Length: 143
Image (cartoon, rainbow, N blue to C red; front, side, top):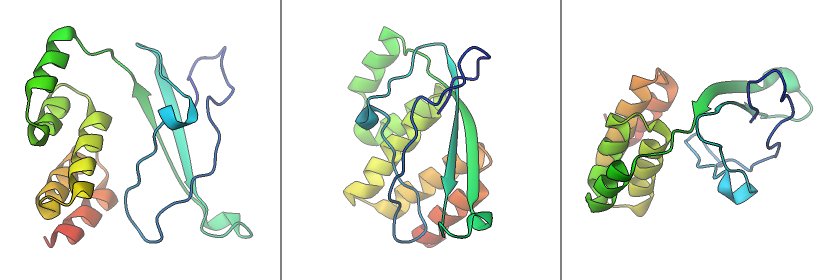
């Protein structure tokens, strides 16, 4: 992850992460690596999936821009008062996409009605034009 400013070109974090044994969505916590985003700064992240270290032409790449906006006190109060199953919608409605995905992913991993929550995550993926992620969740949800 880097800050897309001309003055900063060094990665904030560069690491290898062991992925799942099969296709799917994995959670990466920046906090786990001691990385915290500054408010109102745009960062660009890159990811590469390397299926074969010896044949790098088969790599898959992805990137996106992320900007951390500090939530208002009112929004934080609304989130803390909401039932956990409702929080994903509040985050999404207020532009906190990654937080919405994190909440719905936690609900999937908790095992309570995972097919329902996979459908919710597929809808989030559709909104940001991630058809493969959406399709994977739909397939796992049986739709």
